[in-house]
Image: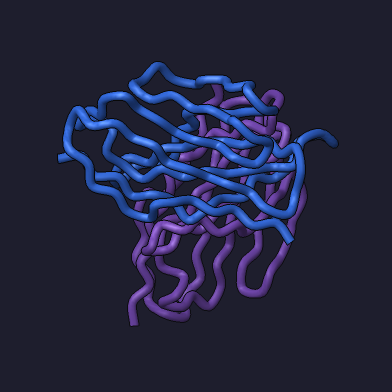
Length: 109
Length: 114
C-alpha cells in the first residue's frame, strides 16, 4: 500500500516564528488532507487539497501531486498551534485514508 | 449541519472483558463510516470501513469487529479485550458518492486495558 512520510518528526518553535512541514507519499493519490490533533486528541481538518495552494489565515498548504509531496506552512506561530500535524492520503474507493507519521509541534513563549 | 458523536469518551477495562464503542452521525444520510485506532505516540490506522448497512470491510487482522445495524450507527466490538487493544479510537464519516470526499472525525474514545 501507499506510504506517507512526514518531516520533521518533532519541531520546537518560539512564538512568532514560521515553519514548513513536509509530507511525501509513495504513490499517486486521489486527494490529500492535513489535520491538526490538539492536546485533547481532537482531529481538526485544516486543508483538503489534491493540488495547488490554499490559505486559511496564518496557515497555507501546497500540494504538488506530480512530485508526490505536500507542504504545510505555519506563519507567526502561536502556542495554540502546538500539537501533532498529520497529512493523510486518499487512495482507492470509499475515500479510504492512509495517515502519515505526524509532526509534533511545540510552540514556546 | 452534520455532527458525529462517539461514546464513551474514556474507558478502562480489564483484560478479557468485552467491548462496545458506539458512533452515530446526524444530519446526513448514507454516509461512509470508518473506525481508526491510534496507539500512543503513533499515527492513525484504519481498522474498518462501511459503505452501507451490514457492509463492513476490515483493513487489518485483529481482535476487534465492527457492525453497522443502522444507516448512521457504527459499533466497534470485542468479545475479549487484549492489552494490545489499548489506544485512542476515532470514528469518522464521509459523504458517499460524488468522488473522493473528505472525512470528518469524532472526538474519540480513549481505551485503557488493565
